[in-house]
Structures are given as C-alpha cells and as structure tokens.
Amino acid sequence: MTSPAPAPRPLVPDVPRAAQLFIAAFGALSLAHALGLTNPFWAAMPVWVVFQPWREDILIRGGLRFLGTAIGAGIGYGALSLTQNPLLLAAALALTAFAGVALAYWIGSIYSYGAMMAAMTCAVVMLPALAGTADPLDLALDRAWCTLIGVAAVTLATVAFTPPRETPHPFRFEHHTAGIALRRGAVAGLCAAAGISLVLATGSVIAMAAALSLCIFSAVMGSMSDPAPMLKNLLPGAALGVFAGIAWRFGGDAMGLAPEGMLLLAGAFIAIGALIRATPRIAPLGLDGNMCFLLSAEVGTAGHGHALHLQTAAALLAGAGCIVALYRLLRARALV
Image 1: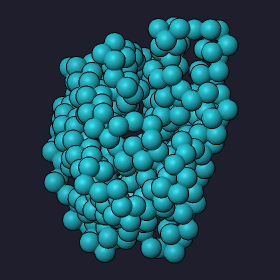
Image 2: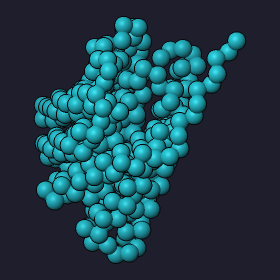
Image 3: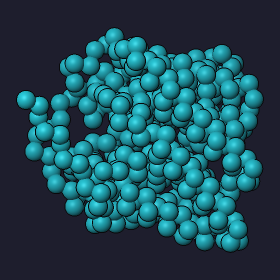
Image 4: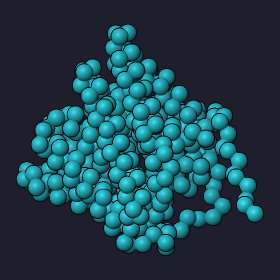
C-alpha cells in the first residue's frame, strides 16, 4: 500500500512575513545607498537567504554569513595583494572553492553555511577586481559592510516574529561522506578555475558576469544536501530575476528617474519579490529570482549601459544553465 502524496503547499503569501522581508531588504538597500557604498544591492541579498522559519536558524545563518564573508573577502584580497601571476590567482580561487564547498557538504547541516560563503565571497572579490571594475580592498570592505547591514536588517525585522526551534540542529550530518564532499569540492574548484580563466583571458565585464554565475551557483549547488530542488528552480528563478532586472533598469531609464527614483522603483520590485518568497509553494523560485534580480540589475549602481546590461544578463543566465546541465549529468552518473 502506497502512502498518500503530501498535500501541496499553499499558493497564498504569508503577508506579514512578506512585509518583514520587504522592510529588511529595502531598508538594507536604502541604508547602504545612503552610506555611499559602491554596491548597495549586496546589502539586500542576505535578507533572502538568512531568513529561515526558526529563530535560532536565522541567528546561526546570520552569524555564519558574516564570518564566511569576512574569511572569503580576506582570502580574495590577500591573493590579489600578494601576486599578479594568473596561474597563482586561478589556483587561489579554485582551491578556496574546493575547500569551502567540500567542507560545506561534509558538514551538511546549517553550520555549513559559513564555509560556502567563504568560497563564494572569494570569487565576488577577485573576479570584479581582475575585470578592472573596482579596487580589491574597496570590494572586500564594501562586501563586508553590506553583509553586516543585510544580516542586521533581516535579524531585526524577523527574529521577534519567528518561533523557536523545538529540537536543535546536529553539528553535521553523519551520512555526508568525505568522498562525495571531495567530488563536490572538485566540481566547484573546476568551475571557479574556468570562470577566472575567462576573466583573465578577456578582462571583460561580460566574462565576469558569466564567471560569477559559475562560481556562485556551483558553490551553492555543491554545498546542498540534495540539489534536486535547486536543479528544478534555478533556471526559472534566475530568468525571472534577470527579466525583472532588465525591466527595472530599462523602465527607470525610460522614465528619466534620478538615483533616488530608481531606488524607489526597486522597492516595488522588492515588494513583489517578498510576496513570492513568502509564498510556500513558490518560495524557492522567489529566492533565486530575488537574488538574480539584485545581481543582474546591480540596483543602486550606475550600471553599464543598456547593451552591456543585456549581455551581462545573458552571461549570468548562461552560467546558471551550465551549472544545471553539469549537475544533471554528474547526478545521472552518480558522481555527486
């Protein structure tokens, strides 16, 4: 006798929770913009992933996000300060991705988040610096400040309204073996090496967008206990976010909005994203969509012009598609 299929999750948003997420994300973005940080959209990004259904989990993920960000930013800045040798820089990023993702998968539980963030942040600092878009120290400090703002915002906006866990998390999942962890880390390391090679070979912003996509999504996918849900939702969510970013950028420019007006327009998109993130059945879609909206639109910055914006958006989606295809292939062969 087969067990009945689980009831589908509701397609109705939790409006109070959506309001909390909006206040946190838009508040973090606005504060980072007011402080003159270079990439204020980074401040809103922690809100969508640090948010959890249990109070302790929010606090754990918030702390580990900042710790992992600080470690990854330090490694990225240190590598760029010590050498300009392309092979050594590629090795530094690939090894950081390998170690961070392997450790994150081996731990498996919520306590893996810091290791994953270290791997991801190293790429976020190194790749834009190598593409010539910013100074490495400025990138590292900007990322740290934005992360602190975002973590503080989501904590203040949600913790008081979030119930406590009934049982504590284990430190790690015992069934996560070292063999699979090493293979997951190797995949992330190879993706990071491919991404930084693109940037070193071309120095272009388009290559940087593709490389960031390869590094970020391979780190997230490799760290997950079960990547199947992300394999299902990543491309639709990324496409939703990218198209929203294009609509925001092109629509705001067509209306001739000043930076403050563009920020207010972004608030409307963030409000819609918060409703999607707070709707149980499509929450994963909302997570990927909100992150890719902020990443592709670069909300709060001057941008790169319409033509280049479209090209970088396409590169981001292409990178996500490559990671989905790669993981589907590897999982079909039981390698990861």
